[in-house]
Length: 397
Ligand SMILES: Cc1ncc(COP(=O)(O)O)c(C=O)c1O
Image (cartoon, rainbow, N blue to C red; front, top):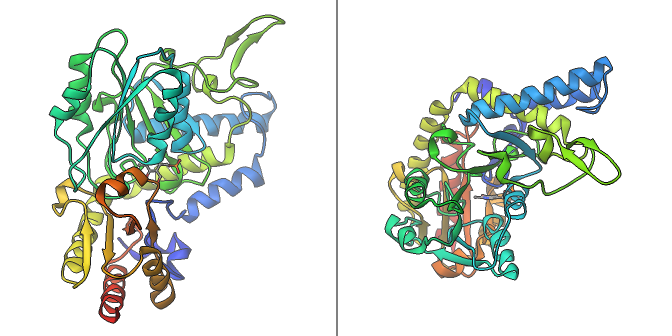
């Protein structure tokens, strides 16, 4: 990637930021789009008839359309949420559950795609957990065995936020389609780690719900997305202003479109900023971003592989993974390693359980890992700096 892209992310001039899986940096055009809303046309959306309100409403609507195009969705509804977690909870809360319904999920999941389903146990819903290999891979046959006529939901991540493994969600959705009855299984894909890095065609995935995080794909914090194939499947989680057609003393009718699911004043500036973020990603080109990151990932994996006392987790083949790379150094607590990388080399990486405690237990990593996660603004020199620092620390312990 070129210097112009680096210049759009001023933080890259001050630190080596390798924690994009947690939240990405925000490019200047997105910051600009957010501040233009506040400076030039700050008004609520979907309400006023005056000019400013009309402009804000139009831009906010446009942002939904941009995100729909970015995700490759053709029908259904794009709903703006505050993050991936909210998007997944909206599905868990919005479906009608019955005792003995079943949810199939996996041990690879972020807590955000785990706890909303676990919570349903209180309503008598059974949660089945499919286990991956140590590298985060699955055999479809294990899903086949887990899915029964009672399975109402299959909820999986498209990419692991710990191991970087790409999960074959399209094949899984096809399997679910074969087994589909009137009651399920519906398929939810947690795209928090895939949407920022992989060219996507959500319509072609065959899922019913797709959740992702605007703040992990160059958008402002406080932004997330839920795509719903059939909005009629879902009851809104929140009720109030902005999401109704009519209200009387004893009845109401719901609005159509995304408004039905976005009760109250939404994060207008955030939504508009997210629209600008996907423009930015499109301008660079998702295929190009993915290719560029693969080169950096290879450099990182090969480098880590050559350092004594370093253990790397997740698949070694590039075709099976993205640039989310977990590793440990024998004898160094991951938090200590992350702190040292900050202090000695100005490098920002995440450490700990990465909101995946069940997976960490399963992998026998009670202290978790250090995770370096890349994005389009990182460079080969930054990867070298990380490798050098890890090597020096590993040599010293
Ligand atoms: C795979 C995955 N799912 C869900 C989440 C939760 O995302 P958010 O913080 O946007 O709620 C994350 C965050 O790291 C994630 O990596």
